[in-house]
Image (cartoon, rainbow, N blue to C red; front, top):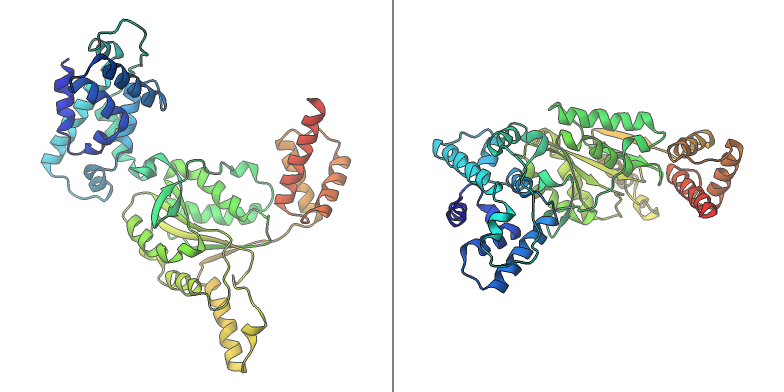
Length: 398
């Protein structure tokens, strides 16, 4: 195999042209294609292997992931059910064949280019069928996505751009105790979204620490393999929502635009912005997107005496304005502070999950005392108590 000729074929890529910007491939291409002294050869070889090892020691797997996650013209057209020109199909097959050959390049073959007898690290080359694997990914694009949405499942907005969350919350539905009926509403609505049925925007409101945000994130973690993604939007970014929706409307994946801890002060321009978005029937126009928001206030407005000043007509208009936003959500789910029995059931459930060894009567007594000295009974307080109890047990055994 002529390595220089192989990398010339790589330079001619059209569909997978983004792969030429990959740092590891660029280092390997530089080593193969450009005349270098021994020191430069060794440095480029080591740089390539270091970049490879940061992901895997399997060069074939590394190349395959680059191809599968690439956002390119072929994948975009297929995901939007656009007709594919014959020339584009031919181009795809040729480039996949080149990647297949490149994936078989061994460390021994590259080391032959370097007149160096001391140790140089090696890599593996697993057997991968690029053509069939890529075809399956195209067929399942609604589950896996492409580009950054194939690599990550939770995102945020930074400088008006969708940015992946590198280390997202890993909370699972199985870790959440209590509020089963509330979570079922959220799960059922999300499944409707995933199954291309009418789905509603949801307002999750109630007391702090009751698991509103955890519910949304756990649902996304549960269904990420089914094509569900979350984009968290801060209140100050509400005006970015229309552009985000436009960018995602043709994406084959399903998206939750998540607004956490939403509240407004009086005369807040963001209030009108969100109301306009919800009035636009986002989920109706873009069947792959819903908005889930959490709030500690039913109507999301910090009301004060000034809101109710003026004549009776003004007062009524103000109250109706406060209520109107929450009514724009198709579903409203209430998460209220648990009573004593519900709180203790959450404590017991979490204790069992974490294998906390403590007599039940003592567990109940200490859990109640913990709630009394902290923020009262809530799912968050129960979790904090279990973490506190576990730390004491570990401290005694260490």
